[in-house]
Image: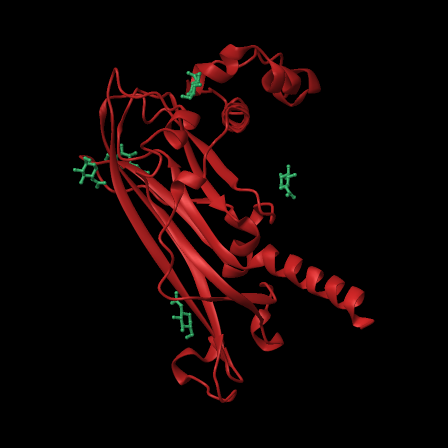
Amino acid sequence: MFCVQACLLALGLLALAGADSTGTTEVDIVFPRNDTYELMPLMPVVFAVQNPAAVQHLYTTLEYLVWPEEGPYNGSFNELRIDMVTPNETTQFLSEGIPNLLNTEGKWGFSWRLRSTNCSTSDDGTAYNDDHMTEDYDGFHRRTSWSYQYFRFTTAKGGRQPNLTAITTGEDCGKTQGIAFDVKQNLEVPFALTGNGPSSCALLASPAPTPSPCRASVVPSIASSISARITQAECYAATPAVSCPPKKDGAAVNSPGIQAALLAGPAWILYNVLF
Ligand SMILES: *[C@@H]1O[C@H](CO)[C@@H](O)[C@H](O)[C@H]1NC(C)=O
Ligand SMILES: *[C@@H]1O[C@H](CO)[C@@H](O)[C@H](O)[C@H]1NC(C)=O
Ligand SMILES: *[C@@H]1O[C@H](CO)[C@@H](O)[C@H](O)[C@H]1NC(C)=O
Ligand SMILES: *[C@@H]1O[C@H](CO)[C@@H](O)[C@H](O)[C@H]1NC(C)=O
Ligand SMILES: *[C@@H]1O[C@H](CO)[C@@H](O)[C@H](O)[C@H]1NC(C)=O
C-alpha cells in the first residue's frame, strides 16, 4: 500500500504529460471568412490553433494565399510560423496584415494549406516500405500530407466590419473552415530519421474529428492585441497603409517611446485598422 502516494503522483504526472500533447487539436481560419467585408487598407489574416501543445508533434506548416478572383493567380503562398506557437493548452492565434490589396471592391479567393504528419509503427516491428526509404526505419513509418482549403470572400462598401470578437462569438462562429486532428499518442522518432526535426511524432486517429471553430473565440483583449501587433508591424513599412505615430527618423519606430505609443496609445491606432 505504500505505492499509493507515489503511484498517485506518478499517475498524476502521466496525466499531465498526456494532457500536454495528445487529444484533439485544430487549426481554424478566423479571418477572413466567406462573407462580404468593408474595404480594408490593412486586412488581418488570423488563424487559431486550438490545443497547440498537441499540434507540436505534427510537423505542421501553414500557408495561405489571397488573390483577386478575376485577376491572375500569380501570387505566392505566405507562411505563418505555426511551429513557433506557445505549446500550452490555451488557443493561440497567428496573424499577419495584408496592406494595400483589399482596399478596393472586389471578389477574392483565399487558399490555405496545412502540412502534417502521421507516424506509426508496424506490428511486427521490422517492415520497411521501399517506396519511402527516408521516411521508414526499422518498423517506424512517417507519412506527410497536405490539406488544401479554399473559399471566396468579397470586399464592398458597407460590408461587415472585421470585428474578430463578433465573428467568433456570434451565431455564425462556426461558418468557417478548420482542420482537426486526434493525436492518440506521440511516438519517439528513430535517431536515423530525426535530422534537425522533432524527436517525437504524432499517431493520428482516423477519421479525423469534426472541427469546432466556435471554440476558438477571440475575447476583446486578444482582438486588441492582434490588431496592435498587425498595426505595429505595418508601421515599420516605408509607406504604411495605416496611420502610424510620426517617425522622427528612419529608426524612430524602434524607440521605446514609439513602441509604448503603439501598444498603449490612443484608440485610433487600434480601431483605425480593424474596427
Ligand atoms: C500578377 O499579375 C498582375 C497583372 O499582370 C500584376 O499587376 C502583378 O504585379 C502580378 N503579381 C505578382 C506577384 O507577380
Ligand atoms: C499559454 O501561453 C500564453 C502566452 O504565452 C500565456 O499567457 C499563458 O499563461 C499560457 N497558459 C498556460 C496554461 O500555460
Ligand atoms: C460562400 O458562401 C456562399 C453563400 O453562403 C455559398 O453559396 C458559396 O458556395 C460559398 N463559397 C465558397 C467557395 O466558400
Ligand atoms: C466588436 O464586437 C463585440 C461583440 O459583438 C462588441 O462588444 C464590440 O463593441 C465590437 N467592437 C467594436 C470596436 O465595434
Ligand atoms: C495514421 O496512421 C495510422 C497507422 O497507419 C492509421 O491507422 C491511421 O488511420 C492514420 N490516421 C490518419 C488520420 O490518416
